[in-house]
Image (cartoon, rainbow, N blue to C red; front, side, top):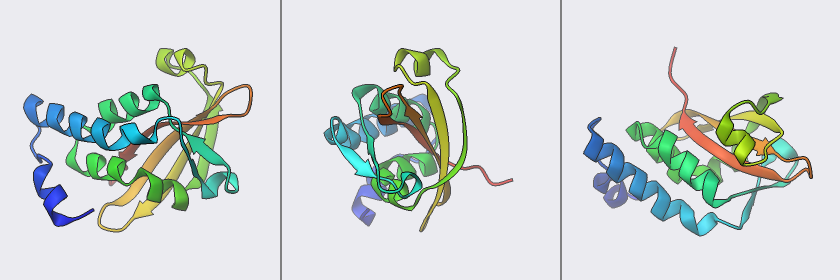
Length: 138
């Protein structure tokens, strides 16, 4: 990501800043809808993007500036991702997206640090992107 793009992304915590970051994420990731990105965590199997996954990512990642930067580099993150754990899908949004199993992945991005990537798996074994955020430092 170039410096000009980074400069255009608001860094504040106000509603207007979050709204603008949400718009930037949706604009950038919308082109991935209907496509898949190979993931190291699944042996090169593609993680697919849906309209719901872009909306979910924008909702979560827009809350903070570092998470927004991570969302804009989701393809790179999926390429470096390692599987951390798997669990049953438990939220209403996850069930609405027909996800059966949720997988937590982690990756380290230069200039951002560790990121958390959530992907879901449907009963038909399709893997769908769910969300990406910057992992908080302990």
